[in-house]
Amino acid sequence: MGNPFEQIDQRLSNIEYLLLDLKHKSLSTNIPSEQTIEYLTRKQASKFLQISLPKLDEFTRAGDLPAARIGTRVRYLKTDLVNSLVKIKGAKVA
Image (cartoon, rainbow, N blue to C red; front, top):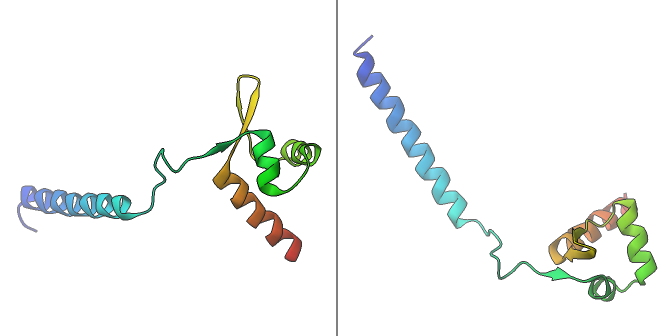
C-alpha cells in the first residue's frame, strides 16, 4: 500500500496543480473590470432601449429589467439591459 505520507504528498501535489490550473483559467477569462462597468440612469436606459420611461418602469416592476437602487435613485447596469433584451427576445421567439 505504500507510505501514507507519500500518498498525502501526492494528493497535495495534485490539489496544488488543480488550483494553479484554475487560477490560470480564471485570469485568462474576460472578467469585466471597473472601467467596463457602466451604470445608466432611467433616462439613459430608456434612450438606450428606445422605450418610454413609463414602459421602462413597467419592465422594471415586472422584474424583466434588473435595477439597482442607490438611495432614492435607480440605476441600470448596461450589461444587464443587454442580457435582458436577449432573454426577452428569446422568450418571444420560442
